[in-house]
Image (cartoon, rainbow, N blue to C red; front, side):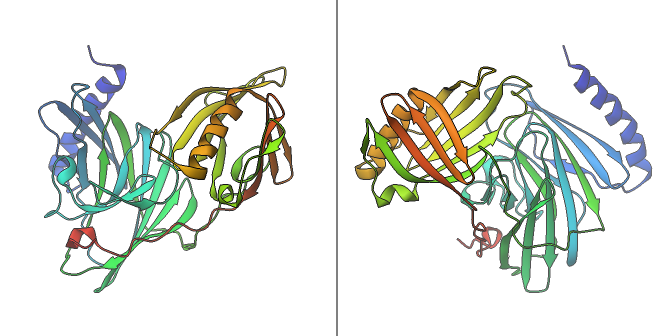
Length: 337
């Protein structure tokens, strides 16, 4: 039994096929297999694509490129993830392939070649996000600038063009997805990194002092460890506020901070990446788990954040502005790493 969304896209697909037969409208070309269904609909300046995995055990990502060749100059594309998430970027016809064999310049929170991670760049792309990609091509270089929901994240790729002739916008997703792509002649002129501005409990915080049972246990090494706090509007309402916690030590320790209508805090769904640690990092991670396990209060004063726990245990943190992410300078399409 197919969903209403599927049937709607099927009707659009049939109608669009008639349009496609009469005009050279750009479309997605996908590497789907027999277990996947890919439908698309066309409209002025853009296309929507619907990807449906046939079985949960199909783990190879679906790759699609958009048949608008980019030769040179400046071009701008926006990708809106109406459902699901994934990576967007650029590839060539020669390097387009199914699964993780594709090679290209991709962004999906991290930077990727389509198979391997090339470096951290921002948070992961979520359902509802719009990613803008500005690509500048000269005879010698390829530059890709990234925009997340209108905010400039800066220069993601600055690589040699080599023997690359044409590039094509592309998407790369591991799950069911509905993605809309739009090409715009009005590309953003701001290319510098624009840091997010936070207030209150939200933001990025660096460890300052950790006190366990009334005794300071942190050292200067701990000041390299961080906490990110982001509100989760999807789970919040007028009486209950939900925030995502992300502690970055060696492992990532994640959970949901919940403030109920009485103003009391608790942390739920704590998870860790469980990489082996030692020394100060191991001590810090043990402290964090104890801290959030017995959390009693969270106090914000300007850029200072204090998390209080049972037994005179607390963590003092200070908000900071994240620096611009690093640009990838080697071109994986050319085999450079």
